[in-house]
Length: 276
Image (tube, rainbow, N blue to C red; front, side, top):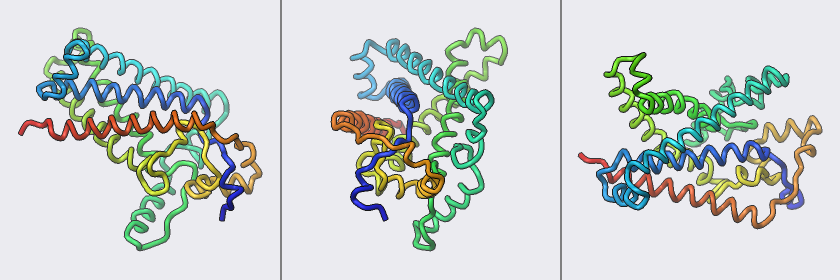
């Protein structure tokens, strides 16, 4: 049981570099979602109005490509950094173990136990540094970059790509790019937002990705296995940090709520924009 004194202690979970990378990731994703959905539903009144305000569909396409390049750069930087830490800095734990985002047998048992707990058929499982749904979110980015990214770049550089693949494949690329992107947008704006911010224990906003810190109470509640391991190994104090300044928390909440509001608005607009 964490007492009131422990509740006021803060511990770092994410470094400034990881928070900055996440900021670039979600900002570029929101930009891609807004511009991409405008192109996808260009016949809808809201999309037409927004495109006209920005400068037309040509401007929307320009910004869509720019956000795509930004997201790709962030993704490649992250992959390069993981490879650097794993093979050149001697940190194999990036690929396996409690600090890794690679799915492991425990994630299967955690997911099973979690679903049983949902229906009152078992105790709530204890999670380590990363829960199974966090790992799913992480690897979904790789799927999105492979399917959505490659199909998008193939259409962007169609003349060059047409020398390698048949022209009919661009119809497949267009279908994959649009439908997979729509699926990704809906997933982020519903499941990811709920798991991260709207679920009990985090509602209405989990600010850890902005401040990088969480209270000891949150740490022990959300990541008990990691917390207990660090206490046993005497490494917990190495993560001790100061309480986030008020302006920092306010800034994080403003950015977070703006992202969630944008996502929900786009979700609703797209659901009502389908032509039957």
